Picture 1 (tube, helix red, strand yellow):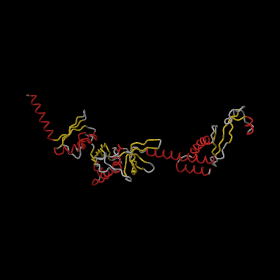
Picture 2 (cartoon, rainbow, N blue to C red; picture 1 turned 120 degrees about the vertical axis):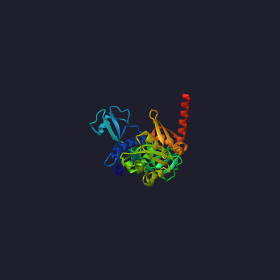
Picture 3 (cartoon, rainbow, N blue to C red; picture 1 turned 180 degrees about the vertical axis):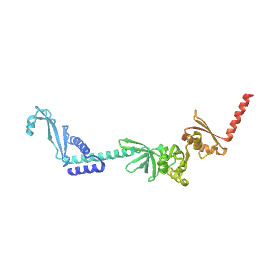
Picture 4 (cartoon, rainbow, N blue to C red; picture 1 turned 90 degrees about the vertical axis):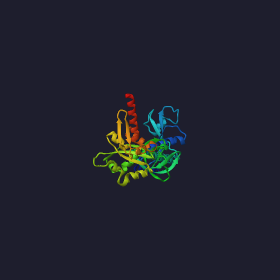
Length: 359
């Protein structure tokens, strides 16, 4: 049994990467506690674990004194010299006190320690693996619901999709495969906790990097993303090479590239717009699919006055203001949208006010 334990420890060292030396040290510490607990003694004990044969012995450590007051901790000089005539006062003597039934206890204790250390090592490996992937996307399988959380299997571990990270209206059915964005990896008493999201804007960014080679190799750059998960998103892109169409690269032939992302996000609409260093052009592009007549900007207040054709006003603003809101998030500008009729009426009012002042 003892030799089998040594072989098992060396096998674990190869498979799990846990040093046999560390396991043996942990077993020795656990055996001392087990010895004191099972045999009701408080004496100063030491464990000798033969690393070659696996034989385990218990030794009591006693101090040599002239007069013994505590049999568990002390030994007389005369008794000590029966073991070795060279002993002197204050020397430490180790006396074997291995109980007859200690072998079974030792085996159980060693097994518990090894199992615990394996579990800890696996948790550490999982934490190391996924903490390095914060900000990346992973593919998992929906397992079950716990309270309002959705647990997603990632292979050796599970990720938690919290209620605030779930897309509105999206159903999470057992066995469904989906991609999620790793927001945070935390160490807990129960092991690493991996928090993922389906609503984070960077999920869309990472999906585009996977789907569009030009983004992955750096030819096309994602400048900004604004997202209302499950409904609509806007992505501003810029090509570092003049003859490369940044928007076309992302959309793909017949929209194939962006469509695969739309399917992954369960029908979320995605507007790919061209970024520009000119704020007026960038703001006009951000309101796509609406057509813009003119943009006047106030750099100090970072406000843009946008004029669109009458028939394009509702499209520019979007349902419940969504298109305008996403454009503002994308560009970082406050956008005020008017149609041509409203602009003319405003101009007429201004002219009337000026005439009255002159009169």
